[in-house]
Image (cartoon, rainbow, N blue to C red; front, side, top):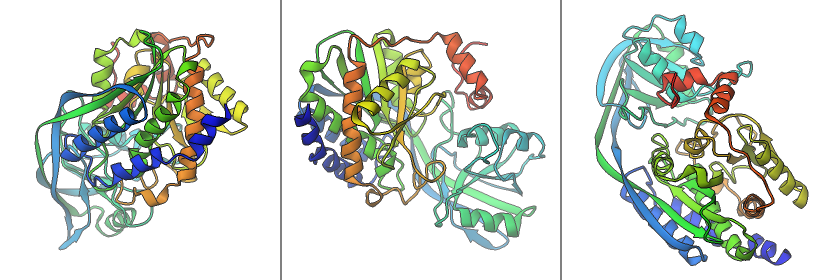
Length: 436
């Protein structure tokens, strides 16, 4: 057992792949950079010993950033367009809704307004309110434009897509501004007319998923997943170069333990996650999800030293993580809640047991993620290697025939979402896949 651990904690394979991804520069969904990153990931999986490493292409709604601006009283404030914002220029009264909670929208007159909201939620609130939920509350209440204000200091405007599966281009112009610019807008210009303009190009594009396998050729499989795309404004080291680098490192370690696997392990690095989980949705639609034993989705790993995993109320997943943590005397935080964001979700919503694995950090939300500051210098190779040991063992544990992992019915998934007050937000963003 110790040999594979020693190899993992001295391996440069995962970190080298992370450097390859971030050096690509732009891995936006549908871009040439995303294509090259997918090809490099396919080749890396092949080199570490995974079999049948391949690409699977699919069509997406493309979007390319142009210029954007927020203008108020003769000033122009720094901003960036949110991906899949429509082009356009609108002027309206600036209304600051602070956190932009659902009840904030219900109490406001937003007809023709430019709405400013924060990117976080208050400590007292019972759940996280996603950017797209805030956007579509603004749309539903008649706003003319949407301004998304970062809660993280550092003059960093946040990015993040709008749009729905049915209508991938949003309905009103949307931009991100830094915490500092947001504070300035609220202090100086609330109640004044503010102009928001976005110039962007939308058209047909192609993305792709990367696939490979290890272990016996069983119909059933444990999926280990990540996403290879990133927002175009940064290196995408944390979100999600580290996840794809981890996927490659786990594949390398599992190749040395292939004889221990009772069930096939299927690796997928999805494309187009950042624009609506398009790659994972495409795969879940065409795969036999009844044959997916479990999903380990790596999105946000390496940002901190301790792994953190949403287990979506699957008791067997919580038990497996605890077993691995005890075996290595190394903590793994488990969160027995639903998390309907990232590439596990198209599988979990169909009842497939799935983790969303990230890592614990001191800050709230994405931190440096979705900003210019998502760069490799903030990550540590030690954390990648330590976490690779735990995640490799977790994959072996889930692939063990002696481990029973029960699925959930649609009714159980719906009940859990409703109990955690997540249903309303998913419905307004067009992400509610259930009847009724």
